[in-house]
Length: 214
Length: 242
Image (cartoon, rainbow over all chains, first blue to last red; front, side):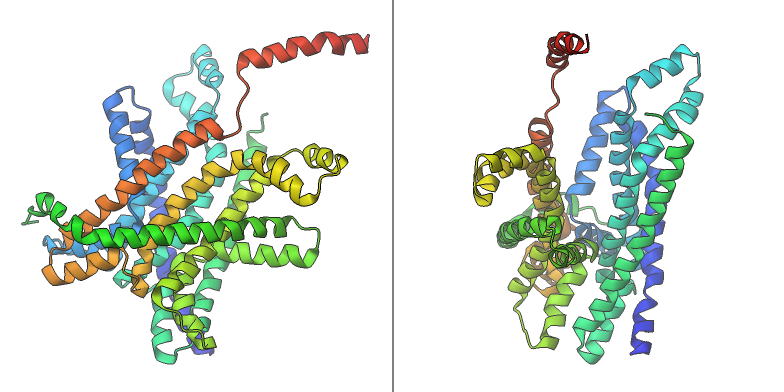
């Protein structure tokens, strides 16, 4: 039994790489998308909304199959890991951008106006006035989204990345004890989501203490 | 990237995928209907003062929300046979999706129930309404305004999640797409057609849920009304102070 648990638990590696890799890329890529969303040109804002709706409106497994089987058929063969990371990162970026957009709207207009009245330039306004408030507003949602990515990363097993679900599936084929095998995988997912939630709470408490205001 | 025929080829596969769309919609409707009813009782359970009921409901909710749906599907389809329960693919997918829908919806329903001021239930009690009547006529109508927009959103998410049921061979959209793809080798066209089919449901759904959020969500009083309320209140307040 110990060996089986160890075999399944090794899948945590790919699960973590997929989750945190796509989260990191998504958190960064969400920023230029936010710029697109906040653009003064309505065409660019339209493009932003089109991208977000299409990326989020198609199930993750469909994107995975398009990236792996579809693009492969066109002659550009992606490895399962590359296809998974690509798809999860794009989806993460779309979700993060929407979270940032909600955060920007939560910062009162008076903050921009006050910064302007103090003659702060655009960079300083973003860095010292809007940024901290935005970060405080979005950090719980970002953490929730990372936990969502953790669960979405289970889908990469369908195109052959040896993550938790994939390994639990292999073990089930060996010994037919599916309840235990997938139960172990499920418990590891639950165990992984706890530290993410705890870390998010501590970072949120820290930022609230440091930039405390109403 | 040699072949671009998929760019105009994909619509021909839509008719072949339509039976899958029907299965996906039925799966969504039944799992959401059952899941939301279950979610309501789980919400009541989590709010219960009985410790054992509270923790039992909490464990079920956290399992439904915290375990990936893919794992739930495998647990039901490949795990339950270990206990002697062999389910066909369709009921297995229904059970897994319903469990997940129950977990997520119970938190949304709980948020709605908690948004109703305690005085409402107390007032109903002082009018000697039965608990069932209090829920039916006082609490639920007010809670629904808060709960319905996220539940519509969840329904769209569950619809998307039906695509996962392909891993246990439920004949939904992705299952049909996989079979056609293997037969014709037109993977790109087939999966593009599948993606478009999903968008046909999810984009109108997103628009509807955005509209409901705007119209049903916590209604903010207009500024004019708030000022009016403030003005009408202040004289009496200052009078009492004086």
